[in-house]
Length: 412
Image (tube, rainbow, N blue to C red; front, side, top):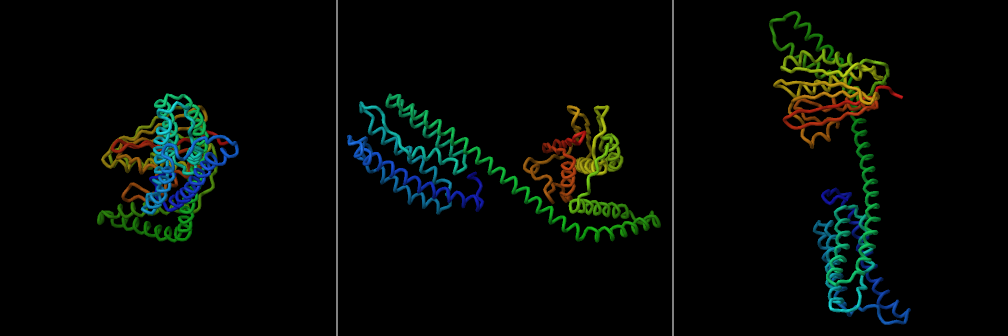
C-alpha cells in the first residue's frame, strides 16, 4: 500500500492492518515469553532458559506497553502509516540493547531471538509496502550481523540465514499482493472508462442527430450566401470552417455512442495515407508545414476497414499540424516488421506534450489544446484497438511528438 496515497479506502485498509498487527504483536510476544520463561522450564524440569530478570528485565514489557498509547496518539493525528515503523525500530533498539547487556562479557554462547521477529517479517505483505518490507528485512539481518561482530559469536549467522529465507518468502507474497492490486486497479480503471463512454454514448444518441440537421441547414445557407455575395463578407469561410469543426465533433460523439461495424478488406496503406494527406494539404501549406513521407516498400495490403483507418490518420496528422502553428516538418514513416506488422509513425516538430499528460491522452474530454475536445484521440485509439493494433505516443516538450500506429497485416 503506497504511503503517499491518502485515499479513504487505503487509509481504512491500513487501519485494519495496523489493528491486526498490534493485537498479533502483543499476543505473540507475551505468549512466547510465558512459554519460554515459565511453561517450558517447568515441563522440562530444568533450569530456566533465561529470565525476565536478565538484561533490561521487566522494563522491556514496560517500554513495549508504553508504545501502545504513543502509537494510538500518532494514528489519531493522521500519521497512521508511521505506526508500523515505530514498532519495528523500537523493537530492534530494545532487543539490541537487551542482548548486549546479557551477553557482552558473558562466556556463554548467544541463544537469544524471539518469535515476534518472524511475525514482523511475515506480516510485511499485509501492509503491501515495499519500503516497510525492506526496512524490516534489512533491520533484522543487520541487527544479527552487528551482534555477531560485537559478540564474536558465529551462531548469529544461523539467525541471519533463517530470516533471509523468511524475507524471501515474504517478498514473493508481497509481489503477488502487488500483482493482485494492480489487476484490480486496471479492472477498476477499465470500468470507469466504460462508464464515461456509456454516458457519452447516451448523450450522442440523444442529441447527435438533432445537432446534425440544423448544422446541414446552416452550412447550406452560408455557402449560398457566399456564392451570392462573394465579395461582401470575409467571414463566410470562417463560418463554414467552424460549422465543419462542430460537425467533426458530432461525428466523434456519434462514433463513440454507436461504433460502426468493422468490415475487414484488403486495402493499400499507401492509398489510405495519400487520401489523408490530400485532405490536410491545404491546412499544412497555410501554416508553412512540409510533409515528408517515407515508404519502405513494396508494402503488402493489410486487412482493415479503410474508412476507419482514414479517420485515424486524419486525426493524427491534424494533431501534428495543429502542434506547429509557426510551421515545421512532419515525417511519416511506413515499414513492415517481421512480415506480420505494419508500423506507421507520424513525427512532428511541435510544442510536445508533458510526461504527466501523456498518460491521460485518450481519456474522454482530456485535451492539451485550447479548443480541443479530447474525442479525436479517443476515437483513434478505439479504432486501432478494434483492428487489434497498438498506439504508442512519445513526446518531448518543445521538441515534438511521435505517434506510432502498429497494425497486424493479416487478421487471423
